[in-house]
Image 1 (cartoon, rainbow, N blue to C red):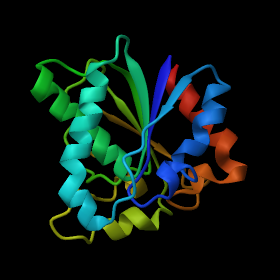
Image 2 (cartoon, rainbow, N blue to C red):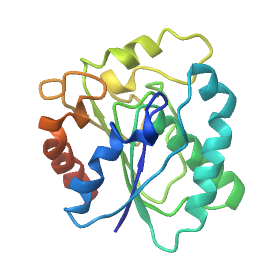
Image 3 (cartoon, rainbow, N blue to C red):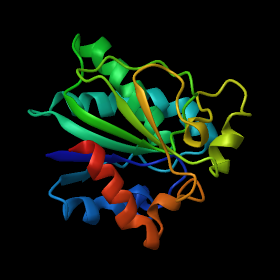
Image 4 (cartoon, rainbow, N blue to C red):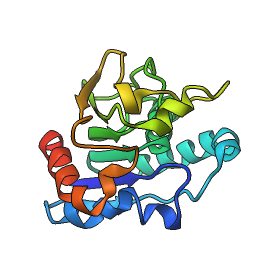
Length: 189
């Protein structure tokens, strides 16, 4: 099965030191992994280019011949969520998605569930995620504290990893890669 990895907003080298570190562990678990790279954005870049990036992601999904799974970190969850709405609007059908996992998503906890052919998105969160706690304070910004507290909207399944994961991007630390890959694999299968 194809697995798409979508990185956050403030990363170097297209996520090479964050979510894209999961490329090999997930490949070792039998996935055909594609790492998306929309580039490094600051806060204003997210506001200015977020919809354009999400539309590109939606258009890429339209080219898929089989359902894909997606794992998105931080702003990547915002990009994916918006892309799923834009896909339905642009192509008048749900996106061809099998399963989705959001790692420390920079989403508002009340973000509405997108139109999908499946009934849930898995949200891996940790209360020790200070980055998304800070993002809740941003005025007129689409982000929120879901990465710390999970989602409160229907359709999302929360998985609390506060004990195991001690920071926003700790999922990708050397000692955490296999743990993270195993937890993702459990919900994607």
